[in-house]
Image 1 (cartoon, helix red, strand yellow):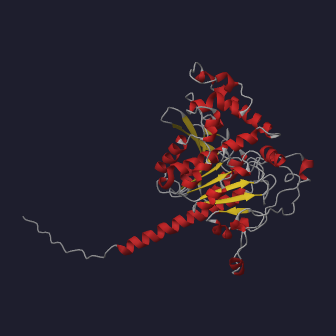
Image 2 (spheres, helix red, strand yellow):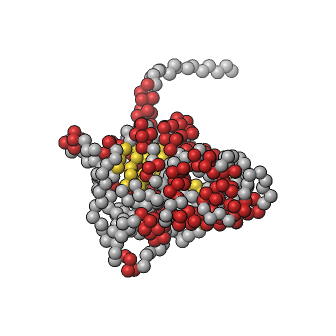
Image 3 (cartoon, helix red, strand yellow):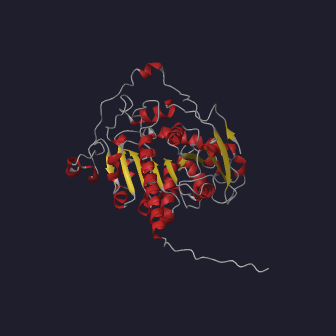
Length: 434
């Protein structure tokens, strides 16, 4: 077990603030508006007449479970993006990546060996084994491509869940957050085997608790694919997907347009850095591998063409993208799933959202914000340097599902107790022979 040491389990935020002159510009903005593209968002006069609060009209809402959002305090206010940041999706994306505060957390690391001899790292909050009861709800966090427990958006979500009494663990994929790489195989948008092992491991360790998961970007794509594969056998009680690219073919098309090339090169640099730490594992690989192309990749597509698609058995990089999208998995999801997207996300295009499948699945719910960029959502009470706007909504949703589960379990236990026939115990005489 290796530990990532920081000053204390829940020290105050170690903020990386923007220049002082920028802070004067970041004043609360007026509410932004967005016309609904989902029929479920149109105000219901009957519900309004009954005095029921509806989610604010700045949001696009879709899905059969949209009615439960009426009880969410965080959705009764308009989506308020900050000025300057809201004017450009790239500004918001980059601002969040470089200036969002980084809360200090002490982790305890657990490494899991996969069946193929690979390894993933689970980062638990230190001392939670003693601080929380064994039946505390548990949340697994899946960061985006090359992301991990060091990312600001991951830590903010972790702290919010932990403050509600939830146990939290960050699932660091192979090579991410210094997770060990022990085979010539990383991870991919299509591969759910590691997540399946993590869920089974966590469930075996805490058999009394309900387990949930939340993923961002590529982590969200992997999570939704897993949910679709598991269908009604899924061990999770609920899940949240954020900034999910959904359709990787569409996402790849947009990734090579205009300013998006900056993100493409940045992610390719991160992939190359992970690869070079473990380059000796890939020496001498034959077949269709193109190791030099992966080692010198200028784009994510180059890396996927040289290494990823071959490792996971795809004929081409286009075959990999078309068969690794989570958009096709939505129709098979059998547990409560909340999907949160930004209409102006440069990396997860809005046109790739499987809106019709989400509406058709009674377990799914979609919220689309007018702004937010990618992993940005610089809005809400803690903007501009605090947690993303999504964090309170995620916890309200998860706690709603957890309360439903707890209520159902309680009623089931009461019914079983009432159903047990009350039989008298016969008198037994014991004769002892001497």
